[in-house]
Image 1 (cartoon, helix red, strand yellow):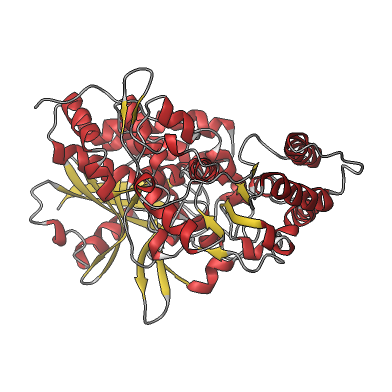
Image 2 (tube, helix red, strand yellow):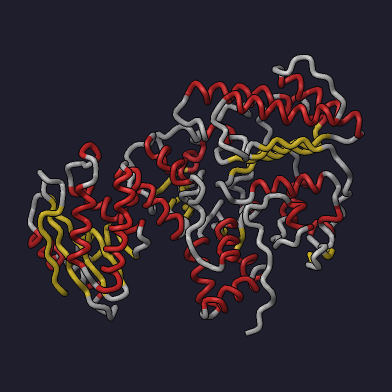
Length: 536
């Protein structure tokens, strides 16, 4: 198989101009951009972090600034051929419009003074550009109005306002009600004029993670068209499967060649790890663009989305939610109105986890207007379980010991060393803080499942059979382990239940050995006190 030279991937690059002029791969989103800018005016889009929202805003800025040369076919200084994009073939007029761009995506904004400084800095840059003298720097409402009207008067064109990651500050202030209320007031003052100044505006586009209507920031801007779950715009951010197998086909071939596997095998690995996001009722498959390009760049299918502080943010989120475990997540129904939950309200955590990208829509039931949520892919499933593990152990020792547990698991997976793994589990349960150890079987069931998932194991919780549900089924390369837990009872009783209810029979034709495992937990010690295993 002959594969072309390795391409440049825009890992961490959010500037449309840089991507085009420096020869990076760009998946053309201008068909949807053209549809949006010709069919409406004020829009809101919610997408998880690292899903290309900032690049979309940068592309919109280039469109409205009339920079047609970036969309035409050309050769970069390095001789890389950039193809013509869809919008360059349309009747778009390419007129210059003044663009006011408010980018709140950068930095760990957690202090109100930092937020005030950033708002003042953005406004001051544009005021200097248009020669405005400001007498009251704190009156951002009046400054915004003067800026919009002055920009229109000087250029003769209506103004475009682009707001990127409007809720970044609020997300970094969760749990501090006083600070979030103060932040909302600042944003209300800043963006309040967007409705009253409508006649002076050509286009408005706002992005974030949480739904704007419930944050109180844009309550006066009720004309915004929320396209977050509209079928036509499901793929406006991220990589669709069609785009992956056409625009990025060469990149899959290169990875397949490097790993010495065929195209189909590599495609399935990418799909399992990065696909699975759905942003509407059509359930169109969307791949995480950050992880996908990071995989192409590194040449390795690995876990990338949970880098750079995602774990800490999720742990902080879990600490404010009702008790949640991994087995509660998969297949959970959610009504359409639940998606209106504000991001800083954790009474119903599943919609919040959807907004932030930890869950996605797995199915839609139109007769009930009901969505079924679940993990989008293995990368997120494993990362979420790892966060739960760190939250539950809640100690530095727990994090240090995880490598010991993982090594014991790998020995178990590769060599069938079950006794050593059981001993490692005892150490794990002994390290769970007393106040977090519930006195029931379900707690240990969830903890064990969480641990397996965080290791990337192929594990099924509540595995259905004709006569009941096995607590856990662990599918290993060299065997299938059907595991039953008993709290305050014996390991023999656990094995007896596996036999009586035929939990292992459904795997009789699998070909791998089937091992039954009974784990007995003590009410007093809150740990494994007895275990037995035998081949089915």
